[in-house]
Amino acid sequence: MAFLEVSNITRRFGGLVALNAVSFDVEKGEILGIIGPNGAGKTTLFGVISGFIPPSSGNVVYDGESIIGVSPDRLVRRGLMRSFQIVQSFADMTALDVVTTAALTRRPMREAIDYAAQALLRVGLGGKEHKTPATLSLQDKKLLELAKCIATDPRCILLDEVMAGLTMAETAAPIAIIEELNKQGVTIVMVEHVMPVIMRLAQRMVVINFGEKIAQGTPDEILKDQRVVDAYFGDHLDA
Image (cartoon, rainbow, N blue to C red; front, side, top):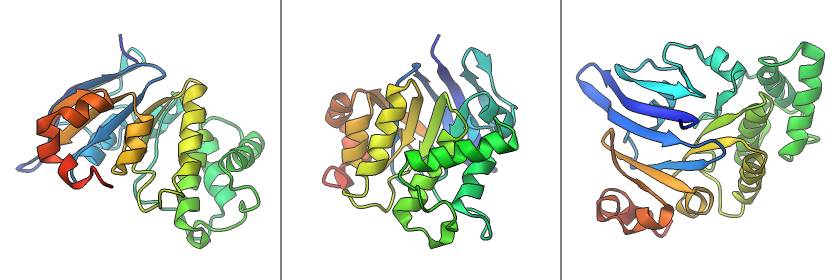
């Protein structure tokens, strides 16, 4: 049995079918990449897996148990954490406050504060713990999202475009953090548009187009799949 099993997930919003019978498995300790054009349904898929959006039909099994109907906070306590494509935080909270809030899902207050400080150091934000997220650079905001994930002691992280808007030089830090987390046994599922990054990190890839899975395989296999080239890679091979 795979660590994460997504089975025939369909999600309708009125007459719009955002996801149509999407299925794939993720093995424990794997880095799986999910790609597809804008509007393909990738973020909706993450919303379903992480408990923010109920599916219209289908099932998600995490570590041997169905998690349909399980709230996001309970999933975090079970080790399933997600980042968000658009980084948002309360304006009056510091970086340390933000990460401490994440750590509180698994620890009492004093321990959570200490663990949050360690998570900030781990992502390279030491010395910036008292800054508000609004004053951070885009790169630091992305690193803050990773610190939030780390602070929950994750077993599986869903990363939603954590490299979006960064230069290739700026992607080096989050890449190193993701690789280190994976070496420590954390399973990673990534939605990403920065193709050099996803091709480097992902062991396997799933491609979604118009809410349907059109391909899956190794990065090399995906590059050679004409359906994927037609639907997506034509605009991204040189990105």
